Image (cartoon, rainbow, N blue to C red):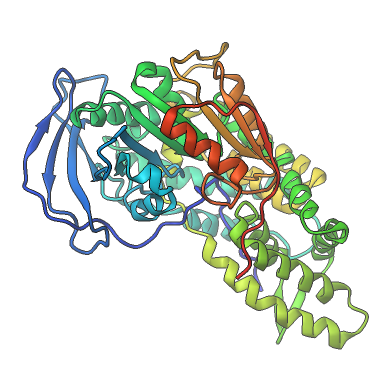
Length: 509
């Protein structure tokens, strides 16, 4: 059986949910005095499930550097109005990706917020350009899973034993470069305008068109990059700023790739620390055992490429902990139980939680490539990718090596000057407000070093550290140490300071 590998990229904590927006409003255009940007209000999408929202389309320039260019972008947004007469202002968010739809999960995010926040803010959800319902969209491009499949046509990593990282890096690089070049050639008037440089200007045009003086912004994962860059460009237009699961402000593709050396290992250590002294031993023994042999159920082989991605791709979400624990425990017994009968029974018991974990693995659309490559520079070569994968494997596992290859080849085939809008930072940003940064110690998607660096680049920032592997923490865990101070901050702008919050298990079902 050939191994199946997943394209491993940082994603937001919230999976996409089916649904768009419903509601009835009177079509009317609202202009933004003194700013580019017009909102046309219209009926919400009839196939959606968002009662109480008002929907509109924001028309903005496609190219904010060339306002005479007649081409426009269309940003879809929806608003749920504050119900309290003590309204504070407008609250918006970005769920990450990059490339996650805000409209698709608007109702879920709204329900996650405490009532005291929902009632006092107009809640604004929107899809950035190139995402969800917003235009322009890429067309004629494959997704990340197709790139992975094409790479495997050239080099299949063996089920067990050493991986030829040079061959794997070359196959992934070439497959990515071919598809990325073809997608760019097919979308010359779309792909270069999907970066954060343009999105934050859309966000400010939306603020002006809504008649708001300031945003209250909750950035999740990639949304922290958006929030930070918005703060640098428009420092006076934020009332509160929460960066949850933060990216490092100075991240490059090369440094992101090299982070694979330690981020899975850190996640493994922090996760293991929550579940007794034997968990760390068993977890590592499963990784080591799968390097040597497969687990067979009814004649079908389950290798490291079927089992370990399900663990590591989901380890940053506490909701997946029960299944991860079950997979590790049963895989350990399937590899090391003293009798064939016990090993076979454990292997069968492993399949149910393993299959349940697969639901947490969305495919990545091609806009994630162009957004990241437009935002970050320093694209590594094939040789640099292979070297990073070799080091990551030696320091952790083949999963870390696989992650290094995936990240390192993300911008394959693009010229080094495709990046746009940002230069390396040398000093902290002093804002009129005190921002809040939240990161978990063992987050494998935006590792803790990212959050600490983000806090370092924000003057007077509060850093809330959560002792878990959760990616995007506010209201995703029952931690009152995290949730209560952030809620208070949104309401009255009270900075919580630097906090170290203990692990808070989810309630058992």
